[in-house]
Length: 414
Length: 83
Image (tube, rainbow over all chains, first blue to last red; front, side, top):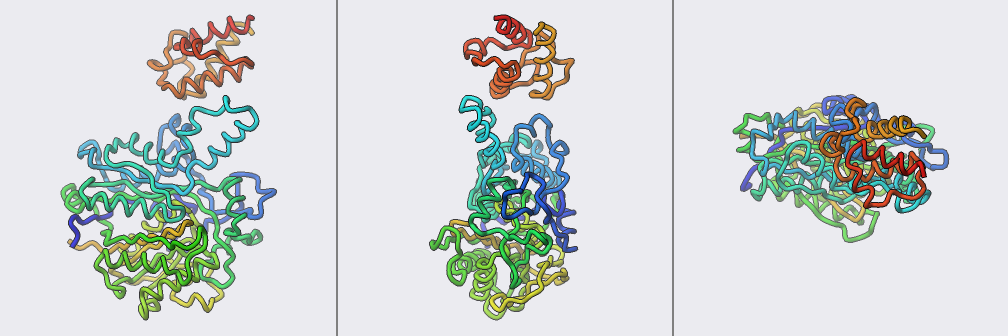
């Protein structure tokens, strides 16, 4: 039994398949695909010329225009998703103890575009022409800072950074702070806007991106034998989580409960996963143990499923290590097949997908699943969503540096 | 450049950078008190004035510190550009 139970009461998402939680979730269930040619910059000399961009995003809808001008795109996404999550939770901060409401929003890279722009100014015009807003637009923690200023959140506030596990670490840390008694409610998640010239060049250099330029809609194909790398995505996923008593007292609607978390590291290689997904398996085991859950109770796994050769193979092996025979019974899907890989924001939006799957019994598919791979032989919910009532689910995210994070969500029962 | 031309350009820059209306940018308006600027906005404004008026040499810090109102900025630029 947990000292203080933590429930999920608000959801907010800005994604390549929709700029609201409803559009995002409907998109996942319909198998909507966010990939397309890159419009954010000229890709003439880039190997990969497509990505999963956020479309028709209007920052002025969510924040003051002047403030928006002082924010990198990743911060604008974070502020917008936070606005949605706080509104969805009906969290009236002014009427509550603001000292006990905090914010943790991470990003894998932060203000990448800002860095590019200002480095260009620096190179062409010298150090004295660099903008006074360069640093406060670029630094990763500034998203959480802006969200606190705008919403008056005076509790614990910082950013997490663990590459593609960032969003999950933000939610996991927020959960720990609430359980420990340092906060009653937290606005938490991840944000990313790395689709810029250097971003795509860098991931191309690592050979991590799909190069299927002739058919972007078939590029993100997790667990499929013809997968050839991930598709870069962008956006933000932010949630409001709170101590059960705090949520009940104010009559909040409750989507689900955070059952437990598991954090590990591969201690193996900077970018490659360890053999057989050893570190990932330990993270899943840790989350189950922390949540007092038996493997058989997990009805759905929202996989990290990046669509790279190594991740999908090793994650599949890790799931088999942890779940044994049940690995073939539980449903496993990668929503990255639709959204692309949102890097530091992946853990945020995928936690939302996992929560809604538990709440509604609707399981999003893995689209583009066509050619089975002998190394990936689980039930990946191919191409069409399924309806199946489940009691609990986990969300996996793994990041460069060997970081593994697993968050377990269960149905809320008072 | 005439004073009117300088004044017009200064107003345009302030409207763009601070997100205020043209009517608010009166000569007596203080950047901080009337136009909602903070210290970072002021640094950025000075850089923008240097660029837009092609001043070449930067506005010295002790001079920049005195430019607290729209009018003082226009007066400074009129003198500076007359040299």
